[in-house]
Length: 385
Image 1: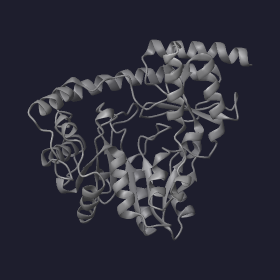
Image 2: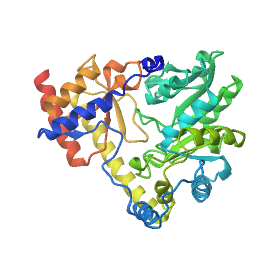
Image 3: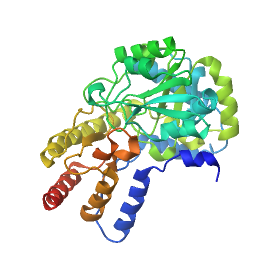
Image 4: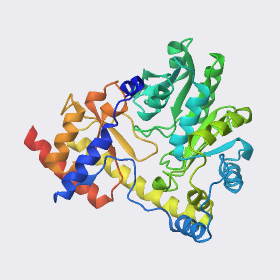
């Protein structure tokens, strides 16, 4: 295998999921709180639009940047929901937000350059940099910083090889949100340092304590990554987008043509229905359900002995300090799965900083299943004490 593969660590939660599914096949009742995918199916209006597109024969290739109608729809969404004017020409549709980050890493990172990231954070982001012989520059970010990069951290850790900083709002695994003032300050600092700011807004809309925002409201030159997977419930359709400076678009188009040719055609036509009032009403109902689940876990997990240093403002995760129980989060999660049938994610998936004593719970099962999970963990932890 190529040497670069040695720099790309496996995503432990997928191995955990595979074992959970194996145990399930053997008859165990597994409660899945490990993977970032709620138990909701794609909203019916989106599914109908996708099926109608297939029935109408819309199954051929599209332009590499995506169908113009959907790029226009996304621009309209920014205007309608956030009051931000975005030229549709700046919107690049991709196979999931991962496809967008793949293009950005290829287009913007030279070998040896660095992409600054908060630790903890979504692990695959640094691996996209490694794929192109660049590096993920992990900066420890604890509860005092709400697990987010700050302008001071950018100044302190920026190196001549640092090209960009990537932040997420809401963030995975912590659910924390950056305010518009914080985003503006980060963008300003990155530019002063000769770099650029990339903002992962994949969980935008799944906000529980504040209204959704976009960095484009305060920094039109920031790069945005987004997806139809989370808020719009289209995980398996694999469709995302990025908003970039218009001068970058020809390069991204050339890369897209060569790397994946075009995003999924049925997914694009399905996503045209994602912004309809009927669909948004469904998504807002689901957001309220997720808020109820979040509130339950915020009450129940501390009663079990987990510490939650920072309350998640969005996404669908609780990042918990499990130091009372373990200094090996992977072993702890594997034992919990095998002995209780409750699957959740070890902190080692999200970086190095305090990773051995932290775990992530995804509130991606209904309240009754969450209560059963808490009951099982309570009995197990008492026995282990």
